[in-house]
Amino acid sequence: MLTLTNPLVATAAGFLVLGQTLTGWQLTGFAIALTALTLSQTLGAVRAGARRVR
Image 1: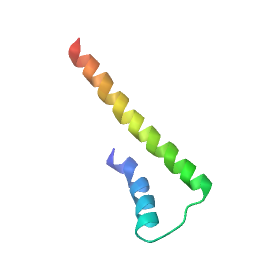
Image 2: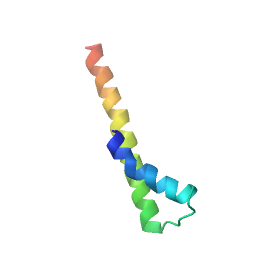
Image 3: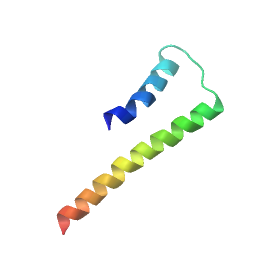
């Protein structure tokens, strides 16, 4: 998972620390990537929990 967050952290750092600007397409891509990462982690935890219950 850490390797998947690296581009997101670099983008956020560039925006917040260095004052770089992001286009609408870049913000859309960032949101999609962040959502996909969050959902994959959340759904993975839910599935792992379901397997333990059985």
